[in-house]
Amino acid sequence: MNADALWRRIGLALAGALLLGDAIALMLTGLINFGVTLPGAIGAACLALAWRWDAVAQWRAASARRRWIWRAGWTAFAVWLATVAVFFHFIHRSIAESAEKATAARTIVILGSGTPHCAASPTLVARLDAGMALARQWPAAWVVVSGGRDFLRQCREADIMADYLIAHGLTADRLIRENRSTSTEENLRFSRRLLEQRGLIAAEPLVLVTSDFHLMRAERIARKAGFGSVVGVAAPTPLYLRYNAWLREYFAFISGWVLGEI
Image (cartoon, rainbow, N blue to C red; front, side, top):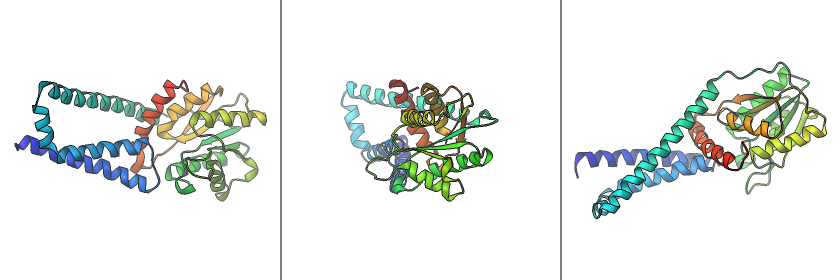
């Protein structure tokens, strides 16, 4: 084996171990989504390729067609990585831009983000803390907590969110629980219905609280759901899962575009 092939195998093994280890660690905390499982699958593929490098080299050398498939596969993967990098750039830019400030708010909507083991995740806690700070800033504002039942779980996210806010000082009579949604589009569509029932859809901007990576898509969905003026407030994403969340958002953004949600 030449030195170039050896370094490629080492690089693949290190990248594979990092990606797979990250995915396993996050899945053990109860986080299972495409932004976690896809890096894990890529990591497993890298480890397998590093392990079977000589066999793959022999397969590749057997025909020109196989060499073409090999080069085409790596080219497609590189192009995909480039699109992910461009999307990450747009997310980073949207986070860095100064958010518009609302001078007053009648309604604050906090979007859910999953409740592994029927408890608020660090990402959800960051959203709730940001929403609680706004609720203290505008004591007359209603607070909508939006999130339904997670897959294979009996608890409802809105109830967990409401319990957290009440435990941190928010009075229960200010809360509106939207507990049926399973997507961002449903979060906002169902929340709008509840607000309309209370006569709270008015000229004042909706203050929308979600994670920094999610804000760009959530604001677009909110406007499509009928909210005329939306002020987004970004909650920070914990560093250890930030890029997994950004990758999940990459696919969610594509899905939202295909389904006409944004």
